[in-house]
Amino acid sequence: MNSFPIGTRKSALAMAQTIQVQSALEEQNPTMTFPLLGMTTTGDNIQGQPLSSIGTTALFTRELETALENKECHILVHSLKDVPTKIKPGFVIGAMMKREEPNDVMVMRPAEFKELKNFGEGDVVGTSSVRRASQIRRLCPGVQVKDVRGNVNTRLAKLDAADSPYTCLLLAAAGLQRLNMDDRITIKFPQHTMLHAVGQGSIAIECRSDDEETLALIKPLDHLPTRLRCEAERSVMRILEGGCSVPIGVWTEFVVASSTNSSSGLEATSAVEASSESVKALQLKALVASLDGSDIAEAEAVADVNGSIELAVELGKTVASLLLERGAGKILEKVLRDRHTTLVPTGTGEENTVKGWEI
Ligand SMILES: NCc1[nH]cc(CCC(=O)O)c1CC(=O)O
Image 1 (cartoon, rainbow, N blue to C red):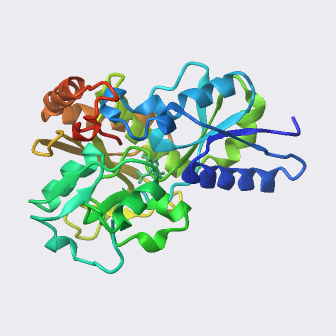
Image 2: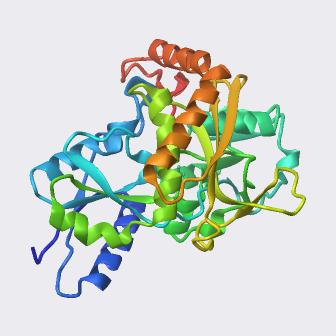
């Protein structure tokens, strides 16, 4: 296996992520070559259409998995947040790469800076994510939320256009960073003010579950602290979604028990910097939001996961149960019902009036 093809989508973001994986593999395996196999997916072909009519999660992965199954390539590179929590039988996430900043950010036109606290009536926030929409409505009461579609580059062009209807966009920091567009980040939402998507900021490497050779090859790219955080996050989602993607925001970090007088008795430490002794417990916060942002269920828990993926998954289940106790089930029922009733056949010209949603 000297030539080892890597499957990916062709968008600028997907390519940037794939090249990152390719470079890491080349460095570790100097005698091998890693050609890229770029593919177009259903998700890429329906950018103008309401996501509400299709459901979201497998949109960007289905065609790629067919190529993996047929051994046209041996791994697929995805944004972890776009990978369904239930992976097709026969496939596995062989590595979750060290997570970059998982935060969401606000992007404004460079000449029109405005502080977050001044956002409200008259401002139009561009996002198609229910998770982001509901949280920004809570943070900045009075703002109007408007759908915006397409790749990161397309969205920025829509914001910058002379006749732009948007005051700002909400995007993932990691996507902009990978595209070398950090300079477009106007405001980074501080921890806890905007809970991010499950898995946001990590790159996933998917392979065939029986492909031992590939599993061994990509194992060094798996980052345990990232894996633990993201497995816990994906576990909350898996319990709540029942097969459909749901608007859920999360925040995870490693915490150490502290003898000092911090109010919670817990002190945050960076997962990346934490030494093995101090990585004692994983904290997970999550929320489930209604489509209009008026209804929100929130929960959090801490567990001593001790490097165990099973315990991280258990933590996710605990938080999911708490969310359900606090009304998440009702909110989700309504989200799914609304999604069903907003299903409009494409080509009716009504696409833009439909509240589609993404992650
Ligand atoms: N929905 C598309 C998508 N998938 C992954 C990212 C960002 C990169 C990441 O989260 O790892 C984005 C863009 C965005 O949400 O701003």
